[in-house]
Structures are given as structure tokens and as C-alpha cells.
Length: 418
Image 1 (cartoon, one colour):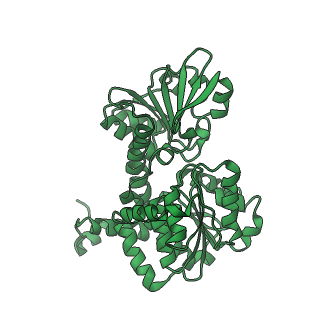
Image 2: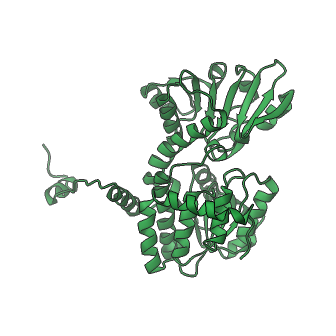
Image 3: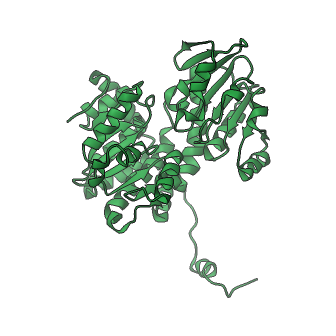
């Protein structure tokens, strides 16, 4: 088995942490038990590019229990937990190519290593595997029958590929499942992003002005959690509906140019390019703290900031100081990468339980149906979404009502009125 990790001796600590995470992942546990018996992925080779965390590890273990040959690399240079990578290799025999802090060249070498395995199905978080397979590694396309995508940024890229006729195999957009974005994006990103900012800075959130760029599901969660810790929230948006929703939720909404001089903390969660640019950095107060929780660090114009800065120095882990000509200091967290994974541990296991249950069941669905599907981006089938919600409620010992025959008849008829 080929692999490339930091240190195999870290495996015991990694295994303990994987088992700790698994305690809060009852839905994936129930799927794993079924997969172990039925072996729906028997003989299938899976190429996964995900954040190498404890929760991802439990998904990989679930896929292996289902009979799959799993090859994993990181979907972000700073998101790997090295002890977890070591445990997957040493304790579970899963091929991992990931090291926390790897440079850009190593990052792509690791993705290439996964494609070298000639996977039949891909599992992506940001669409870097799919993109590489469609450009520099077209040889890998011969073996790939389908794939899944975990995050908003990746779904945007893949839908663009499909619309332009470039996508060569079907993708199930796990991100679009309600049991994923309602919970993972809102509650997971909200909590873990605040956690990452606090771990990196140890600054007080209460009483500060916190600027959230983007009011999608991630932005909603982040704004809510930061407000819960006592911050005054400013939301910046380009979508009038989302901006209106932020206003109705009780937040101040301003253009980024007007928010820039007011913020103590800034965090982008848009999935777009240069949301905070040079003209915004120039307006920020001395000591402004800037982070990103979108998938790629392109949301911040870091190259421009580095050219504009008089000096740049690392103050402490995951905190870089950029000093401008006017003497003001801007602090960038986690190199502008996902702050919740760069400086913290990512989402809580209990929300990733639903996200990765979607991944596992979407992959099973693809294996059964890939030959019938076109090279398009598909939503997770509603019955899978509903089943995951049902299993989650069951694990929480929560019961719900069921429609009576009379109620079903009423909902499916047009004759009955008042």
C-alpha cells in the first residue's frame, strides 16, 4: 500500500480521537453495520479528496467495511490531522496521502497519487480531483463512473462544468442535501468557525464588531453564533433576498466598503473571489483580524496584501501580521484558508454524521445507478435525505407523528376545500 503521511508513530493518538468522534456519529454507525453485512461497495476503488479529520476517517472506515478499496488525500493543505492520517494507514490499512501544512506542489502530488490508483468513483470536497481529472489527468477518466461532491464551492464548479459540456461523469451533490446544508453548513460552520478564530487569537468576541461576508447557510450560522457570544454583527451581501433576510434576522447590512472601517473581526463565507480586496484592507482599523471559512483562500486578496504590506511576520501559530505603510496592522488567520480546520478541528462529529451518511448512501446509489445517469450534477435522492433525518431522530430518541390515511388523501386531492 502506497501512502505519504507525516509520522506513522502518531497512530495511537489518532485512533483514540477517531473512536471519540464515532461516539457522536450514530447514523453513520448504523450504515456501517449494514454495509459490513451487505458489502455494497465490494471490489470498488474509491478516490477521496476530503479534509482528513476524525469524522472523515470514520467515513473511510465505513467505506472499507463495505468492501471498497479506499485512497484518500486532503482537500486543503492545512486541514489534515496528522495523527488521524497515521491511524488510517497503520490501524485500518487505508492509503492516505496527506500532511498538515503541505505546500502547493505536495498538495497536487497527493491528488495525483489518488488518481494514479485509477478510482472508479470519486468523493470530492471542492472539486479539485474532478478538475484535475478533466485537465491534466484525463487518463484517469477512463476508469471513473461517478462521483460525489461535499461543498458549495465544489458544486458551483461542477455545475459550471456540466453547463459547458465538460463534465464527463455524473456527480451527486451531497452539499445540496437538506440534512447536509441545513445542519453542517449552519450549525457546524457557525460553531467551528468561531472556535477557530478564538483558538488562533484568544480575543474576546463579546463587545466587538464582527463582519460576516455572505449570508448563505454558512453565513447564517456564523452570524448567529457570533451574536450569541455578544458581538455586534454586520452582514455584507450581493444577493438582495439574502440581504433582506439578514435585515429581518436583526443584523445590520452594509456594503463591504462601509463595513471595512468598523470591523474588529472579518470572516468571508461566500465561495467567491477577492471578496475582501486591497481597497478594503486599506480601510480597516489597526489590529483588524481577518479570516475565511469558505473552501478556498481566494476570498481574500492575499497576494495583493503581501505586495502592499511593508512587513509580514508570523506572530503565533495561524496568525500572520501584515503591516501597512500607514502603520496599521492587519492579522490574517490560517493563511486565509478554512479557519475552522486550519486553527481548530472542524465541524462537530454530530453534524458530520449526517453529511457523511449522505456521502456513504450517495456512493451506494451511484454504484447501483451510474450507468443510467448522464454526465450532470444530481441532487441527493429525497428518500436518502429523509432516511438520514429519520435515523438521526431515532438516535436522539425523538418520535414524530405520521399522516393518517385521511390526511394523506386530503394532501393528494384537489376536490376537498373548506
